[in-house]
Length: 208
Image (cartoon, rainbow, N blue to C red; front, side):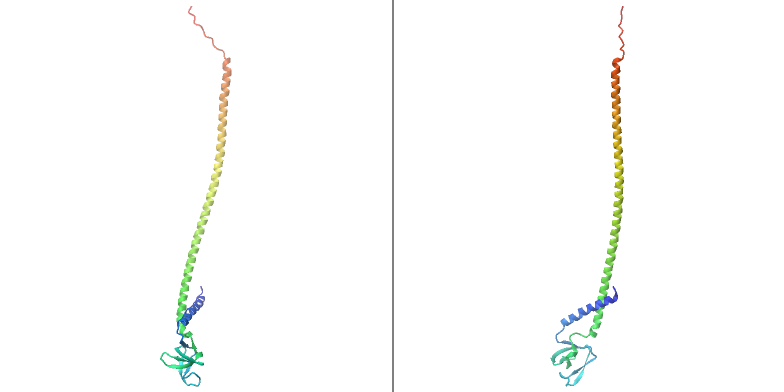
């Protein structure tokens, strides 16, 4: 992911995660001087009172009371002065938040970079697994094709052998018929010839 996009996303996240919780958790009386270079403070709640000093931009103060367009605030040193209410704000100045925001941006950028690296690693692993599976599928399909071809060849050979065996059976049966017919014919001929053969007469023995 582009670094500029990371920084833009993380800056927005940092602003939302830091500014809103700070506003929610701070005391209702907590105020900060605006980001103007200097803010003049007076001894009373109108422009007619004399200026008694200044407050620096972003300085935290505690709101004591409000009168008209002025608010009385107490500084960290305990001094109470009047300052125009328009020059107070409910959240720390952007200048004070900037270091923390930068740190948060760096943390979120690092976190998002880690997430991106992890996602790329997972994507790479998934792609590698997919390639292995596709290769395995291709091997199985090739093997299946070989088996189908072998089966077709075996079926063809088996058909030829069966046809040959059937022919041999027919030839053998024909030979049996021929042999049987020959034997029967020979017996018939012998039976017809034998009765017509001349018989030898017996000679009688003469004693005198």
